Length: 347
Length: 104
Image 1 (tube, each protein chain N blue to C red):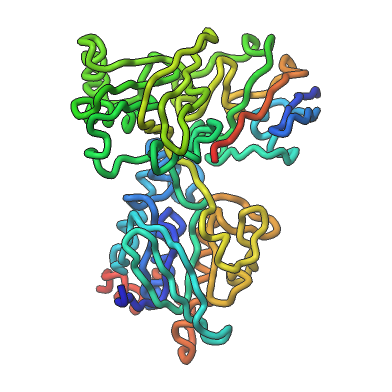
Image 2: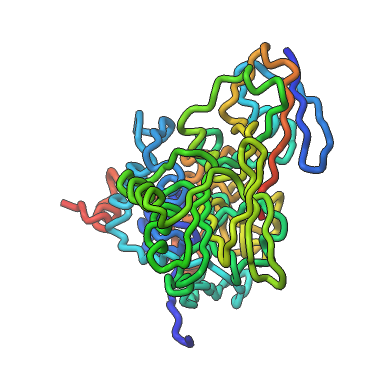
C-alpha cells in the first residue's frame, strides 16, 4: 500500500495514559491517531481489570478500570481522535532531523503507514500477546500445529483437536469446533470453568453424550516429528499420565504483555523500559516521547496519575515540533474561551 | 523479621529478608529477582506464579476463586500459587518457593 496517513502525532497504545494525552494535545490544537493491538481501547484497565475498583485517581474516590476508560473517552470526544485497533506498530523510522523531526510509522495487520511529526509511546507493559505455555519445543509446532487464535475454522475440519484452557475462548472454541473436528478434546487443570454458564453446560452435554472428551490435567510433552503434532502427553494431578492423539493444539491461556518491536526502534532501553527526561518525557530520539508505565526516570512511580502528568508535559514540547513558529500561551480550561471553544463548551 | 527462600529459574537458591505485611511477590521483586508481577498484585495476570515447597502449602491460606481463575492461565503443578496472594507473616519464616517458568 503506497497510501499513508499524515497527522501531527501518532500515539502508540490506547490505555488511559494514551487517551488522556489526546486531551492535552487537543487543547494545543494537535491532532492525533492512536494505535493499539487490542480490539478495544483502555489497555490494561479494560483488558486486565475492567471491574476492579481503582482508588487513586484524583477526583474519583472510586472508579472501575472500565469506568475510567469510559470517562476518558467522553473527555477526549471533542478532539475526535482516530483509533486504529487490532494493529501493532511494527516499525518506527526517523525521516526528519533532530530540529524538525518526522517519522514513518507502520503497523502490521493491514499495513497502515503514518507520517507524523512526533510519536508518543504510551504502551504500558508492551503489547498484549497470547500467553504461551512453557512446554518444551512448543515453538517448533507454532503455525503448523499449535495456534493461539482461530482465524479460519475450516483449518480444523476433520482434525483431532486439543483445546487447552478453561476460560471463554477455550469453551467457545470447544463448542464451535466440535461439530467439524474429527475428535475434540478439552483439557483443563481443574473441573471448574470461568466461562459463560450456557457454554459450559453445552460442553458438559457433549461430553455426556460421548461427542467429545474432557480431561483434567496439564500438557507435559508434545509428540510429533517435523513440526507436525501427533499427540500430547497429559499429566494429571495424581501424577498419572495419558497421551491424547491430536493434530492441532489450541492453548487459550489469556494474554500477557511483551515489549515487542519497540526494542528495534533504536531507542535507549533500560530493562525493557524507555528512559526519558522529566521535563518533556522525551526519549533519546528527539520527537519520540514515552509516557506512562513504559518509561523510566529517577523516582518513577507506575501510577496512572503519573502518566497523565507526563502526557501534559510532553504535549508542550510536541507543540514546538508541530507549530515551530507559534508561541505557546499557557491557559486554563476554567477561564480560557479559546480552550472552551475547543471543548465545545464555550458560552 | 524473618526470611523466605526463593529458588530462581536457574536453580539458584536465594535467602531474602522478609517484611511483615508485604506480599511474597513484593518481597521477591524488591530484592531484584526476576518476577514480573505485571498487574501489581491485583490477582489479574499470574506472572508471579511460584511453586510452594512441600510442608508449606497447608500453612498458607487456601487460594480464592479469583486466584484459581488466574492459575488457569499458566502451567500449574499441585503446589502452584500466585505469590501476590501470599501475605508474609512471621509464621511464614523460612517459606520456600520456586519461581515458575515463564512462557516464551
